[in-house]
Length: 291
Image (cartoon, rainbow, N blue to C red):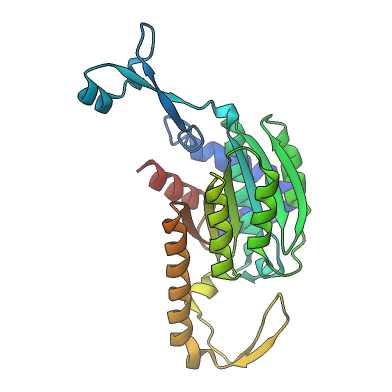
């Protein structure tokens, strides 16, 4: 925990250093870029000819046709990745010295760094119930600096409207792209499904990183307290021990439903606890993808 707190301390000043350190340490554990296969997509087959890499031969197709074909892939530089980061007021929640937004900013910085190392054209949109800032997709490594500046200048405010942002973003993206959504998902689940389904209709792929705090998962409050909705400022005075079981049942149902709608669309869903070091979260996510 102390290591994660150190990484997030003075985040705006150290975002580039922290992201680079995490990414370099992360990649060093792999024989190839962990983003390989994340963005390079299968395109079609062509007949094998002398000089083509044997490793690309599709042996399953050979067993059916008794002829050699190789798989062709879209060029990495043709792939566009758009990161959408939620900066609504609920992302300002903090426990154990870690804010959800700080965790999300560092995660986003690491993923953008990885994406640009893979030479993918990479864009960044920061939003709450409206688009706060939006950077187009570019593939030059120096584009990381501009993305980090936008991340460093984030202020959490306003309410959340994820579905509206997804619809608006999709209207601006003409080419099939990868949409990486980073949010605490405190929004209407049915509307979110409709927006994600719209992305699917437009042939985009989506990865949803659900940022969640330990207190949201465990509800380990001991004393009677006032609970304040950061977005609406509604206040409830509660005895946590009286409602804990009901709360835990509802949060479990909520997470199960989230997972179901994502998997129904064949998208990817990853819950990230802010208590978990970012290196571990990245390792778990990419290991699952490789499998």
